[in-house]
Amino acid sequence: MKRKYVDIAVRHIALILLAAIWLVPILWLVVTSFSAYDGRNTSQFFPAEWSLHQYTNLVLHPDTVANFPAWFKNTLMIACGNCVISSIFVLMVAYAFSCMRFKGRRGLQNLSVIVNLFPGVLSMIAIYFVLRTFGLTNSHFGLLLVYCGSSGLGYLIAKGFFDTVPRGLLEAAKIDGASEARCFFQVVIPLSRPIIVYTVINAFLAPWMDFVFAKMILNAGVSADWTVAIGLYNMLERSLINSYFGQFCAGGVLISIPISILFIIMQKFYVEGVTGGAVKG
Image 1 (cartoon, rainbow, N blue to C red):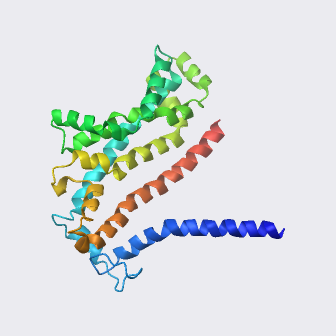
Image 2 (spheres, one colour):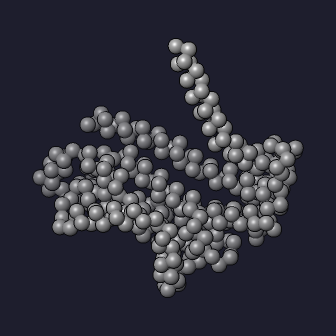
């Protein structure tokens, strides 16, 4: 019995240490964003003087280095566009592979799995030269094309969920004269809210958190065209960090707010979708 309590105590201490390692940097970023000092101060954890100076400068007084309102608008537009287009692509491809039978279906599935085994960054150079050929570098539309272009390959999880939809419902709908489009929108989609929520969140987060492709495509040096990831990264340059580190921390806090709101809202619908599907099933 004594050994059992010792094991539980050791386990909880280890969990507390891991939680502290994960939370302390986030807490430091948050408290530093409320510092009145613009630069980086590693001599103390909490700021000597508290202020909203970093937030007001970042949001209300943009300059050529810290143009946060423009970055936020660019990122939000690209993320919302990708959220809609990629979600449609993923759900349509998942439905085609799960609920339809056609020649070459198995081969296309195997090919998509093989392609997904290779990291997307391996195609960066080829993608860049293709976009440059068509004059789409330094363009938000070109960046959106990159995010949406291969989104359909991420259909596997959605397909697994669609496989659980009773085939009797689809067969009954088709006997009544329903087309594939009607089966998709009126039979499968209403029963698949959890996977729709998952797909929407992933599609929104991809451009919101991406730095590599955004930095490669939006490389003209015009700060008003950057996304938030590029802009915040630029603040950490050696010549700028002592003047903009506080604003960098404030930007990190602000950029996390939409993601948190999205998760809170979508979690509610996720639970409703799971319970509703259980009752219907």
